[in-house]
Amino acid sequence: MFITLEGPDGSGKTTQIGLLREALVAAGYHPLLTREPGGTAIGDQIRAILHNVSNTEMVPTAEILLYSASRAQLVAELVRPALAAGRIVLCDRFADSTMAYQGYGRGLDIKVLRTITAFATAGLKPDLTLLLDVPAAVGLSRRKVGGAEWNRMDQQALEFHRWTREGYQSLAAAEPQRWRLIDAAGPVEEVAAAVWSAVSAVLHERGMEPGGCTNG
Ligand code: TMP
Image (cartoon, rainbow, N blue to C red):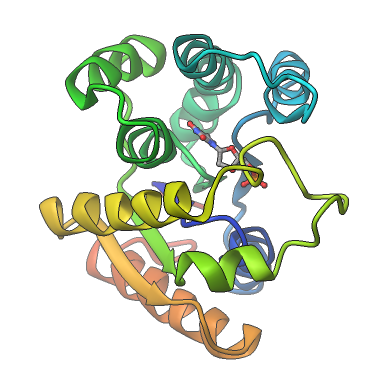
C-alpha cells in the first residue's frame, strides 16, 4: 500500500508522517518512510538544486523536470521494490505536489504535467493520499524566514501558495476515493489522531491487518 502526505508548506506533513510511521510500527507494520524531492542519493542532490534559494533563474520547465527526475529515481530505486516486498510505503509529497505547485501555482498545463509524471513514475499512483489542509498564510507563518527549512518555493508570493492550496482542494475533490482531507490547523496530537484514524480505517477496509496479510 502506497500512502502519500500532501499539503501546503508549513502544514506539518513531516512531523505527521514521522508520527504515522511510529503508529504503524507500534501496530506491527514495517513501513518504509521516504520523501520528495529526494529520498535517494541522486534525489537528494537534485533536492539541493531545487531548494537552493540562489537559483532564482530556474525556469518552470527545468523545475518540473528536476522534480520529475528525483521522482523517477525514487520510484525505481525504493518505492516499487518496497511495494513488491509487501511493505507499506509512506511518502512525504509525491506527484500531487507537482499538480498543485507547478500546475495550479505556476499555471503550467496540467495535461502536460500528467504526461511527464506518468513517464517518470511508469504509471505508479498512491493508494491513499492525505491532504493536510491549512490556510496558506498560517502555513507560511510556521516557517521561519531564512531558517533551516526555508527553501526556494517558500519565497514565492502568498498568492502562489493560495493557488497551490486551492489546487490541492480541487485535486482532492476530483478523486474522493483516494484522498482524505485532514484539518491541520490544530495541535499536533489532534492532527496525528485524525491521520491515524484515516489510515487505520483504510487498512481495516482493505483487510490489511498486520500479520493477517502480506503488508507487514
Ligand atoms: P519540503 O520538503 O519542505 O516539503 O519542500 C519541498 C518544496 O518543493 C515545497 O515547497 C513543495 C515543492 N515541490 C514542488 O513544487 N513540486 C513537487 O513536485 C514537489 C515534490 C515539491
